[in-house]
Length: 103
Length: 110
Image (cartoon, chains in turn yellow, green):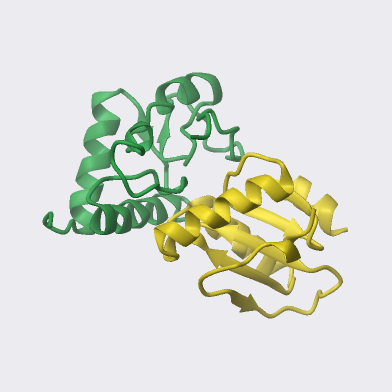
């Protein structure tokens, strides 16, 4: 179960930050207020992270990506979908759960 | 192609939905309401319908029917949690002094 086994289409955005202890990757929806809050939450705490707004990917590649994420992580998807160190994940914006994953 | 919606068009739409259902809109103390209105506008102008801004679209109104705003889950979510999945529509008695958190997804994934 690793993010490395998934092909990531589209444009990955890199956000710089001083905290680089973990590899943080967020699958987000550009129009989603929870995703925006999640990005802000990470930025405010100075975490370096990458994100991909999936609604900017063409439909075919996006559906493939979602299918791969469901298969690899054996979960249903909701957004923001946070993947920490390639294998830990959490569906949704939940500061307490995120903090625990990043501690 | 459908006529593009302005921010004001979308604001009027969500206000009307909110009034008709006896809900209220997010109080916008942190710009959440603006983010959601912009999200709905972007979705309408890209897809031709008000896909929920917090859920991914399959770019087909027949597949997204249940998540066109107001989504099919808004009413039970407002009853159970005080607000919809996106935190756009609220129970009129909701206490905005309390933190607003993301609620579980009621939709069964297709």
